[in-house]
Length: 193
Image (cartoon, rainbow, N blue to C red):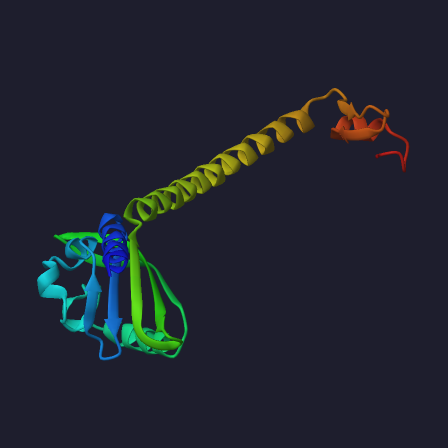
């Protein structure tokens, strides 16, 4: 009995020490186990969360999400593991992003409950959004600079073509790569490269 109590305390300490939100939801959608990290998410004390309906305490981003979570939880009770990535929740007046994993809890081979584990990925989500914004800005800058360079190239080509002297560029194998109009006029027919 002492070993069982020691193992129980050990597991409870692990559960309480993690920053991951952990919640066990039974088949009736009542919350049976939570860790302290759950208090921050639900903005309630553990005692208020325990035995409450999942749908009464989970901070859904939108009322329509309730139906999605009902389907997801039902799928877990049927043996599926489900992931909800970068799910937005309002927590203490701030929008946070969670990666949520919902897994069936099997006891003696039978699915009795669902384990919800959630990690706050707000900073990673914000960084991804900043990177996406920077990429869009960079793409716009590159497009603008490309337009500018094309315009400058057109001006340069017009200038070079109007020069009265012949100009040409040859590669390392002495093949003609480019020539202005005057130089091309000097070439015999069929040798314009």
